[in-house]
Amino acid sequence: MKSKLPEVGTTIFSVMSTMANECGAINLSQGFPDFTPNKYLLDRLSHHAHSGKNQYAPMNGIPELRQAIATLTQECYGRAINPDTEITLASGATEALFVAIQAVVNPGDEVILLDPAYDSYAPAVTLAGGICTHISLMPPSYQPDWQQIEAAVSAKTRLIIVNSPHNPTATVFSDDDWLALANLAEKHELFVISDEVYEHIVFDQARNSAHRYPALFDRTFVISSFGKTFHATGWKLGYCIAPPALSVEFRKIHQFVTFTSFTPAQYAVADMLNKYSDEVHGLGDFYRSKRDCFINAMQASRFSMLPSAGTYFALADYSAISDKSDVDFCEELTREHGVAAIPLSVFYKAPPNSRIIRFCFAKREETLLDAATKLCAL
Ligand code: PMP
Ligand code: GLN
Image 1 (cartoon, rainbow, N blue to C red):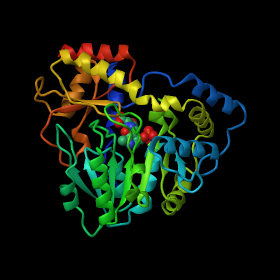
Image 2 (spheres, rainbow, N blue to C red):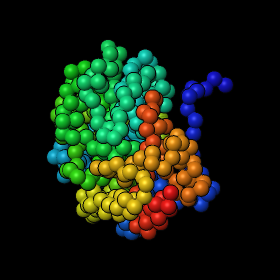
Image 3 (cartoon, helix red, strand yellow):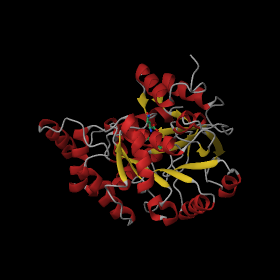
């Protein structure tokens, strides 16, 4: 059979988590918490499952949850969103990203990706018949060079995909970055997908979003995920906020990809947002202490830790320890030293010549300290 994705193998997140499980390694590779979500959220899930909320939810998501998302967006970014025409629930941000890409990319269209880019973007572009234009963000700052990005825009460029706070580099867009993006998109009439799944996990500055930049409103799909926000990655509940005309196209595709998402989770998350939205607003503080715990413990190691301004990831330069490629080093780390991490090169079309890997610190303090003890022995 002719493969539609000949260059694609198994996602690094499955590869590394499988290896970590086989070896009994502490898994700081794939990004997921090793602690339980809020008890109220779990109780509401059970409550709704036991009280009959077990059939298909409306295709766009239940009204209670769409309203709660509109309220949260207003609280966070001061933007009024119409929950009926602009918000669509999806089965994880992954589905929302896939659907948004299918909605705007036609065969032959070019799509700008900033590498290291989350690994689901490029295959979704390819399946839509699009062509990826990769721009490399370079260590150690990974700052976008907007002139270089603009120089890559051609008459065929239709979409740019951005992600702030950024997985895997843990960088966060500045106001200047958002303004540069808005100018670029307006000037060249580009659509924008703004992957904001870590929007609430920022440490050194206020939360920011495409929702704050009016020049982006008419052309942007903003995508987020309750997996990150409520420590429940396995619930696969995400959403897309886009202006009505774009939401219409998004929904045409969403209805035939999954149609709708897990009903009891939608009710439970709506209850959680209505009762404990302070948990969302406190997420940056919550993860800051985990970041500090891990990065401080790693000071005694030969890894050189890069700053983490957002997300629940931290990068580490291992060039003082090994000359191996990052893929080989991650395998050695998992099999021989009992800690799994993610190599950065897999997120690039043209990887820079660096020795940098990603650790996830969405873990209990004891997990982080156990992992740091092993890493300090290298
Ligand atoms: N985008 C980014 C940048 C992510 O890190 C992730 C999850 N790790 C996703 C999208 C997918 O989110 P979900 O699990 O809700 O599908
Ligand atoms: N986004 C998670 C990470 O970056 C993984 C998600 C997945 O496994 N698909 O680790």
